[in-house]
Length: 481
Image (cartoon, rainbow, N blue to C red; front, side):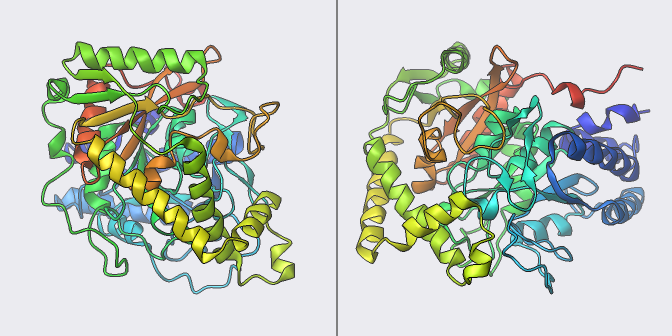
């Protein structure tokens, strides 16, 4: 019989195996996860709400299907959380903003949420986000700041920080996040979990993001195997997204077969700082290099080389034009009273975005297209690009940039993430060690557009080889009986 005290540490893959074997019920799992969610909320403020009644109803329905031997899908009975950017039927989606009305009808699921519902997932609750997901940390005027699972006085990162903290602390093994400039990878790196930003369009999105084709929907999970399982469910067509890609004709989960042996002969480009000259904290640099050395030990063909991206200042300025314009567009309908409710930093970038011309926007698109073309050519020679996810580990909570850093905007400490939103490539973050304070360090894997399976296979092989993964946060570790 499965030890019920350990249920909150199970991966989705382990849970579905236990359900199939009749070792545990989805109801028992939901009970354990809901109790954990309450504790997580007290510890780090990761939730907008926890839906105990709805989750238990989902779990009871899943238990009945498993008893009949007729699960609704590969995630039947598995607890999942949803970032409060994505629509979930029956609950307000306020996007972290006091300026969004709670009035309904709230009668529609986002495409990824709909696919999870069809698969029988158990919806635990909605997780925190900064207002409209505008920055790389998670705090908002409505919900406050979300703390890091390893040290609540530090940030969980963002903008999908609530989901990352929930996964790390055992409030469900799966979370749906969004990533417009690093928003699943940044909190994954800070919170010690796995996250994938799939190729743009691989997971349909509706309503369309104000940030346009920078914004991706992606899995946040305990490991790469769970991300592949989740991607199999959510990477399905939805007519509401005109930019969605054709359905894949294979299973991402099945593509993981072969383990570390799949790394042999893989052409890996290792770039310590993307050629940008950005200082990387020594502990981060050392952990990433150790992981790269293990890739070579496992048979990958590793070359230290920087991709031929445009200069960092040019990329950052172009990203700002695209990002700030999107923020200005989403808040354009707001009157003075509603605008006064916004995060002051969001008001600043909206003002900047409103000042750009159409020519400014098109010039930024030119930079983006150049970056995409250069990376497409680069991946003719290399299957995978490896970088640090971030040059730092988690800093103090409640601020946009580290104190005393001299930085002004979150894009200054995330130079390795947003370039790949501009190019629309698949990119993942996995944990590859901890610093002297016990804070997780992230490793980023990037592949050519449409090569999501390459990122997932390599990530899974690193987990199997013991390269990826960090100890659970103390609060998430079950007490010994």
